[in-house]
Image (tube, rainbow, N blue to C red; front, side):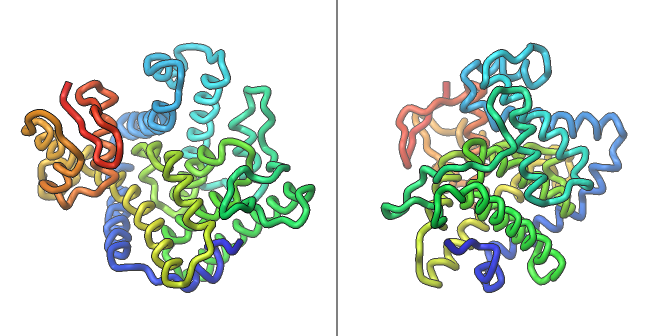
Length: 345
């Protein structure tokens, strides 16, 4: 399999929609100094809340112990007992480490192994080791791994991860491709390699936060990135890039992934700006506008109702607001599927 961090990235033609997103994100990046100049207690509160929300958003849909216990675990109010509970605490501690020590963390195979090991340091499951068996992900009837000898899988994965890290530094040093694009496709290749038997999704989030911080995009230090890469997104894009397609389709796929990645980062910055009241023209927030559409609708409503009335609001923001309203018990889904219907409770 040919990964994206090579000739594909060198030859990428970024569409104008993604160029606009890059410009907006870089504008927000320049305003980060405002967050850091807040009183120390405000900055501490913001960064602590971001970690807690990151963990909450990551586990709320999969945690079996209930919302109340999840919050208590994150706040260290109860002692974890089950494997699920231990995982929450381990993930929280890794995110804390990333946000406090990212400047001194080198991007290499050893670092990635250590971070994965930290995700299992309180459990009986051994972490910090690459998988030694073929991945259970099928594409056109073939295993996704391209190793000649399955016994060499672990060794080959280590080589692929180290090569990925070397390319990351090479592209940064050449300074010909924007950092966010490099980060996006580093994560895509990590997903394609899927170097661990478990927790590849969690590691993708951790590495995204680390790489963003190291390139100066510190939105994840002040706002949650926990909704990035759900299972369905993870599987969808891995399938997309596992297939052999022609050059035109390949370019489309790369921009499709870049659009997903940049849209989420941009939304995180926009939400943070609104929370800090940094929006110059004090417009009504996107969340409030979506809520007004919902509240003005009699009976059932769909996300298309919001899209039609608020065409400027990006899809990730609409999904986030719907998820938050659902979790808070204000709306519920009554018909699932691509055209899901919702109602107010």
